[in-house]
Amino acid sequence: MTSKGQILKSASVIAIVTAISRICGYIRDQRVALLLGTSPAADSFILVFSIPSMVRRMVAEGALSASFIPIFSGQLRNRPRAEAWAFAQKVFWDIALVLAMIAVLGAVFSRRVIYLFTMFGGNPAHWTLAVFLNRIVFPCVFLLGLAAVAAAILNSFHVFALPASTSIFFNIAIITLSVGAVYRPVLQWAPERFRTPAVALGAGVLLGAAMQFGMQVPSLVRRGMKFAPKISFRDPDVRKFGSLMGPSLFSMGVYPINLLVDKLFATSWRMPAGSVTSLYVAERVVQLVLGSYAIAMATALLPAMSHQFAAGNYAEMKRTFAFSLRVVSFIAIPAAVGLILLRRPIIQVLFQHGEFVAGSTTLTARALLYYSLGLPAFAAIKLITPMYYSTQDTMTPARIGAWTLGLNIALNTTFLLIFFRYLSNGSPALASTLAAYFNFAMLFVLFRRRYGRLGGRAIMWSGGKMAVCAAAMAAVSFGALKISGFATAPHFLSQAWMLAAVILASTGVYFSVAWLLRCEELSELLLLLRRAEPAAASTAVE
Image (cartoon, rainbow, N blue to C red; front, side):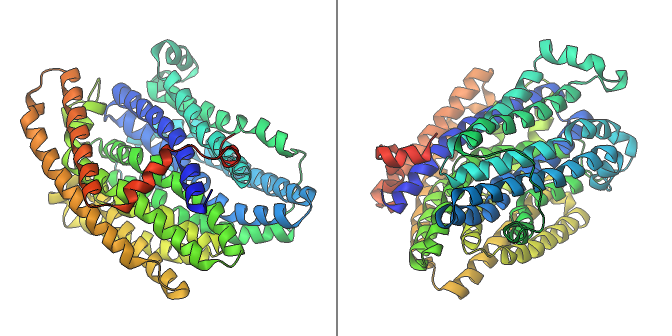
């Protein structure tokens, strides 16, 4: 297969598995919303859950892979296999030791950890449950880090399906603990004042993290990984890995760190109750789109572009990026428009059940509006950072990430103090969105200065066509929503069918206009429906 076809095929495998994971993630979030609504207990659980989630996104979705894969892949190609595996063992055990210490300290000093993330939250008693939950959940940092190492090793062998599928079982563990017949017996060991479903959900997070790592161990062993302890911080290759890992950890963490900053500002006494949960639920809806394809494409891109850079084929690497950006934008732009127009019906159908009431929907829809505006930027950042990492440059994204984080904090502060009357709980989401566009623009401009043009003219031409398609889709979506009578529908099922019909009609219009305008991205997406050559397919799936 061509490199373009191989990337699309690998991305499609990851996207299918990730889409299943996102569906399970939705069920998980829907269970949390149903049991806890936007109550203080919900805010406590979401805040605590955000910490391991941030670690997973920083490490599992890019930073570790970006530092490890180029080195390990080069060793597999140029050195004896035993030396490559020795390097992998050292990285595994070095990271295990560091994460074990962090996990212990985070659990022991739980109160200080929670205080750090609720310094604007007024009464500390409001977060007592969060302190208890953090002691249960924080050890996940250790397990999720090891799972990320295992995934990076398997991705180096072009095994994508298994690592991507582990998050499905992570979500299933939490869903299982959300069932009354399961979580009520679990709560018997908790102190009486903490006997809330939030505690059982925390136990589910810990169980799910253990499953994410454990599922990958047999596949690692089959490929030659040995788990005999081998710690070495002075090994030259390990030190090179560490020098790449530090900056990439920060640069890939800009998005999740910004989300955590958003939640920190959402704990302000000025914010309405439930603001932390509303931001989390809104961001999770955005992730249903962002995670299903943008992250999948980014995962498939890094090994391909690393090989292209190692071969000195810079022109092909830049074409690979431009092609990937166009394909992902073809999905992200209409998704953003759809989420903006249909934000309230989507939240109402997906989450307005049990303790998640109409007021919760209003809070969440406001946050979703501003997060949706940033969806194209969030997706584009996922694609451009692997291009830097394929050149083994992790410092530049880290520096830009520092500026982006500072901008996000400045915007959050400004919105909270000056524009809160107009933005309310949506202000943190808008701050993250604006910071994301700044982040992508800086990464794009700097890479273009160093390596030449990135096909910007073709990207802009394609973007113009996508805008026309999205405008037609928006008109149909707006009109169909008015005609459907969704607001007056009496039952959940009728609302769900109406929303599905509006989405299908709008999507059909988007693709129809794209076909009339002969958008190249439409034909490229159709490649995902074709069968891969047997040899190529075997490298993509385990």
